[in-house]
Amino acid sequence: MTEAVDLSYNKIAPEDVYTKDGTLDYKNNPANKNITGTWKACPYILGNECCERLAYYGMSTNLLLYFKNNLHQHSATASRNLSNWSGTCYITPLIGAFIADAFLGRYWTIAIFSIIYVIGMTLLTLSATVSGLKPTCVSKTPCHATDTQLTVTFLALYIVALGTGGIKPCVSSYGADQFDDADEKEKKQKASFFNWFYFSINIGALIASSVLVWIQDNKGWGWGFGIPAVAMAIAVGLFFSGTRLYRNQKPGGSPLTRICQVIVASWNKRQVNLPADKSALYEIADNESAIVGSRKVEHTRDFSFLDKAAVQTDADRREESVDPWKLCTVTQVEEFKSIIKLLPIWATGIIFATVYGQISNLFVLQGSYMDIFLNDFKIPPAALSIFDTLSVIFWVPVYDRILVPVARKYTGNKLGITQLQRMGTGLVISIFAMLVAGILEVVRLGIVKRNNYYDYANMPMSIFWQVPQYFLIGCAEVFTFIGQLEFFYEQAPDSMRSLCSALQLTTVALGSYLSSLLVTIVTNITTKGGKPGWIPDNLNRGQLQNFFWLLAILSVLNFGAFLFISTWYTYKKPVGTISRKLKDDDMSSGYHTVELSRTQ
Image (cartoon, rainbow, N blue to C red; front, side):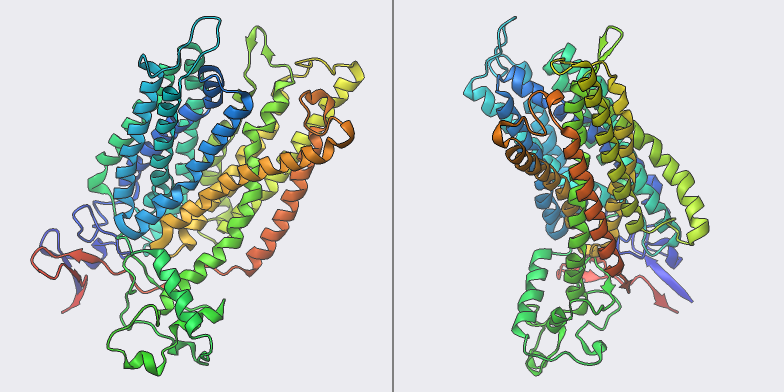
């Protein structure tokens, strides 16, 4: 008879009461499946994400106009400052992810960086409301900001960038941690979590891009920054409210150190021959991995030169204890291989992020030359992005409740389609989005040419003709971005999930930088000889559709590369169980491994 010791309640309980993926409760005891995790814990995490995204987009959506009008910066300076800050917001997750995976764990990383985020938002609100800190604005004259006021504003913004860097890479992974990988029922629910996680992001973005933008334009920036600050405070409160229900993975130590150990050990043994029988490679005898918070991973034939790090030489056998800089386990080597295999998939996300970035860039520019009036109401061109958000809100439940069950009947896959198939579908849809945007521009310029509307600020073609391209981008997001979230979580080494989530986020920053680079190159080439170029100041005299064709071509090539990489990619195969290193208050030694089962 097999039974398990329940350390929380000091009694005998069935073994399946506890999770088998190594997660712990808030008291550092094995997580009880009946009272922790799954959808009991997720509402707090989803609510936290919704409020945090409302705060972020509520602050950032209209930030360019704040720089330009309130800080009195030139358009180019304001644009550059916004790009630098936005890029930083998607680079700092690498810092937060490293801290989470190596030292603090996801719970404490989210908690600490959320507080930093609130401090930044509070300071930003004060910089727009407190006399002496806020720029001086006199009616009918430009606002003026002193060096001190500029310093306070940008200090607040970069504190926010640091705060979001600890939250972005951890929240989605932390939500997924609430589902036990070893439980098939919970594993199926995890796929649904990623859909609703992205849904919650867009609910926050919807409120921010509609209500908060209106408040900033009509009620002032004190309210415009204050409401996002309150939303972030609510996000922190929601997160802490679920503490007793969360399941937590122990941090596994520095992933960069383990990667370096594999590189050094394999290089030092480059002259050593690999054994014909790969089972002879070094691995600890226990069922659990030597890496805290990680399962053993099955050996693969990919990048076999790295396997030399796990070859036991006579010198290794003479050592009293294993030196990880000389000898690594198979699991440690496979961890590094997993990261290497993720990189090509990661790279194909950059072009998609470039296409996605057009909803706040060239789509807005295109819309600004169209008819932006609905009766007497003037529609801000950037407001059309709300149709991207509505598209996501529409497609998430359709995908989760209709497409997945239907696909499951035909494929037999519990996810409906594989993560790579899902991502590839989104890449195809993004190609059509660029084609639709290009066709719209051809039609628009045709009307301009036939009616000599070249000098019209708003030619008589409704801006609502842009809705299809926004809607297609939103649909592509549901397939590709959510597919990436799930893929990078599932295929990442167990102890590097935050780091891999951060890696996925960097595609957004790199996509933005690539878009800027392409615009610069295209402008330099197409304006030679005094020509207006593809993207001139007066878009009615340009050829913007050619830039959309360029993105469509790059997307087709990118999809071809994605197909090739996908056929080569092999999914991770974890084996064994995750060790739970628990603090023992009764032992001076500090930590010991708890046996969860015994045979009587």
